[in-house]
Each structure stands twice: as C-alpha cells, then as structure tokens.
Length: 213
Image 1 (cartoon, rainbow, N blue to C red):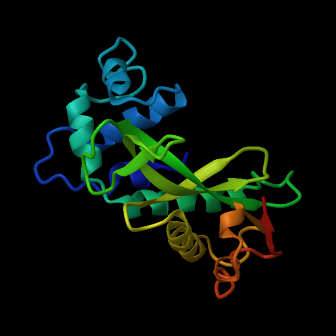
Image 2: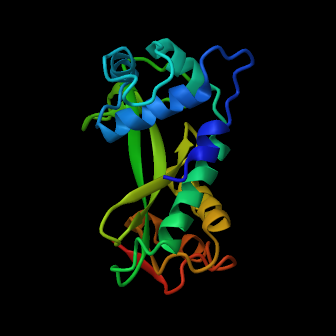
C-alpha cells in the first residue's frame, strides 16, 4: 500500500511511548477496512485471536489509542494522504474517469449534551433551542473517479465558519496536490462567491473550472 514510511513515522508526539506507533496505527487502519470505527472495536480486535494474523505486534486498550491520537501531528497524516493520491494518479487508478473532481462540503463529528471543549458548537432545533453540541468540519474529497476519496478536513469552532474553513482547506489542498491535479471543483451554493471560486487560481489546482451543486 506504500504506507511503510508513514507507519514508521506517523508524527507520534508521545514522549515516553511503550506501545509502538506502528501497532496502534496499523490496528486503526485494519479496523477501518473492516468498517469498525470506534476505539472500543479496535481494542476488541487486537485482543481477539486474529491479532497475530493481522500482524498487530501488541494488544492495547482504547485509552492507549486516545492518548496516541491526541498527540499525533496531523500534518504528517495529511502529507501521507496527498502522497497516496499522487501515487494513485501516477498508477492510473483514475484512468477510466473522463474528469477528476474535488468536492468540498461540511459535516459534523461527535455529539454531547454539554460544551466540553473550545471546538464545540451548539446544535439547535427548529425553535432555535440548543439540544446538544458537536464538532463541525469542512472536508475535501476526490470525486468523479468511481469512488470518493476524502483526504483532508478543517475544523471550525465558535466565531469561525464553514466558508472560512473551506477556504483554508482549499489553500492547503492546492499546496499539497499541485497544479492541475483536478479538472473541476464542486461546492455548496454558500461557497459560490468570487473570492472562493478564484481561490485556487494562483496554484492552478483545478485545471478546467468550477462547478456549483
């Protein structure tokens, strides 16, 4: 999969690591392939009889995963994902697609009844009453090539906006992917302003133009 370098150096920020970063990260990737997304599911996987078969060197708990992921440098993961996209394009994974697109959209992650951190934003019902809190993100994916490939996200907290987060996300994608990686850009109507649609012009990330959904 071309992940050897990333598995060896994932940007681990732990000062006194007892469990190798490779074991933690590989377990998370295997669980994702198996469509298991929770840390408890990963813990169950590495404590099961298939642990050795999956080449997981050491069992661990969900608290170890939480400690590990909280200290990961996101820039290293972003760079690994961009490298994977460049490799996919180089190996003609998109050759049957007439055009390669990028899509930026908003999403949410997690939910709680209380405001637990500076990133929490309120969820409101039709009466504008606060019914909980969540984290909100702008995401970017490669689309139009037979499958959707999310490769980066940008969170935004109170006082920020999806529009501003999307601009930061597009600028970072342009810097990583380089000129003419994609043929078009798909965004929500709220992004359809001249400053946003021209944001990639200096880098030439999108080669043919932009599209609004």
